[in-house]
Image 1 (cartoon, rainbow, N blue to C red):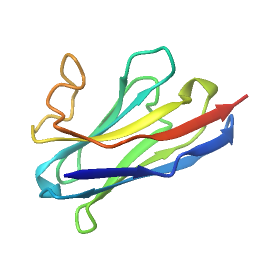
Image 2: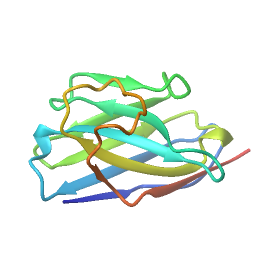
Image 3: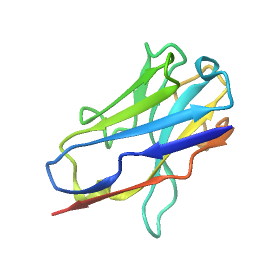
Image 4: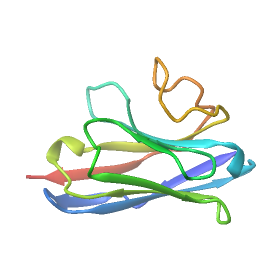
Amino acid sequence: VQLQASGGGSVQAGGSLRLFCAASGLTFSNYVMGWFRQAPGKEREFVAAISRNGVTTYYADSVKGRFTASRDNAKNTVALEMNSLKPEDTALYYCAASPRLAVVPSTPPSYGYKYWGQGTQVTVSS
């Protein structure tokens, strides 16, 4: 199984980025897809999750209203549209796949996520 994240970069505050994650080696539509991030010196945190059929999404309070997750099961891809970016959004962003049904994160939030991508860096300058 491979999850390949891409689309990261450097933007100024208020800007936008769109992250992508391409999955292979798994039956993509059988997995909830999640996005996580980890800033230097901080723990990895949950960002967003999208249900198997793409109908249901769940977001961390810190990104709600600014980030939007979507998926294309025909192309085995998941995307994270990030708008109104803030310096505190700076982090390494990971996509992950969970065979569980729930999009609401557990405790810890990474529980149930079986496969992880390598991460893509997002840097937001003020």
